[in-house]
Amino acid sequence: MPAADPTAETIAAAKPAAPAAGRRPGDTYVQSFARGLGVIRSFSASAPQQTLSEVAQRTGLTRAGARRILLTLEGLGYVQSQGRQFSLTPRILDLGFAYLSSLPLWNLAEPVMEQLVAEVKESCSAAVLDGPDVVYVLRVPTHKIMSINLGIGSRLPAFCTSMGRTLLAELDDAALDRVLLAHPPTKRTARTVTDTNELKGVLAQVRRQGWCLVNQELEEGLVSLSAPIRDRAGRAIAAMNISGQVNRTSPEYMLEHFLPKLRHAAAEISLMLQRKA
Image 1: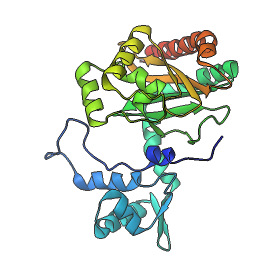
Image 2: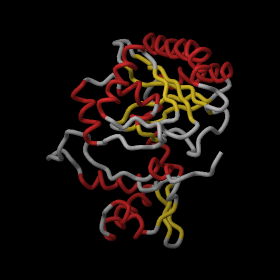
Image 3: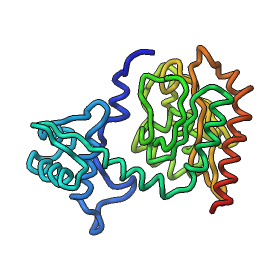
């Protein structure tokens, strides 16, 4: 596999903290808190250590503003400094763990996913939708299949990933239009669907069939198959996938041999979640 490529920075780089799509800052919007989150998100695999100037540049803050936030985070134990370099500390994981531990789904899903990986000998992941992205909440890897290192908290664009399309297909027309208007699809490979109308047609098909296969639209050589995980009300609250290299596992082979196992595993997790609720 090639070494990490520029797409990794696109995925992992910080995104300025902003209100959710369709909302405008008002009296309840705490700008300083939003800026603090922006500083945290400015650290990534491509920028694990930053100077004060680099943090200010990546977040759009003044040096004085970035300094105040960094020193506050350092005082709370979320950031450490060595000379002119700042970096996150392991305590930052507490923020994500609070989310994961608040939901019973992931404890239920992990053994099922591990069994699925043992059967198909390919990686399996679970993700939730967050605006235009899917966020990985659980991953059971086998081989390294991507040039991008994926783990819990990793983000990928929803429009060209199987889990993303599985979850986008569940949105109503207005919500989907908002996402696509604010974040127009862009080319990732020669196969990537970027025409909005064509993409909507693909999502409609995903919704009808209840699963999604994406063949080399995110990254050359990568094929992925996903199915939804549903709550008691029938809402798709997450998606899980099987992903592999097309030269080892063709889309046709995935559909014939992996799809029934994947759908069974997703249904098993959904049922356990519904019983738990």
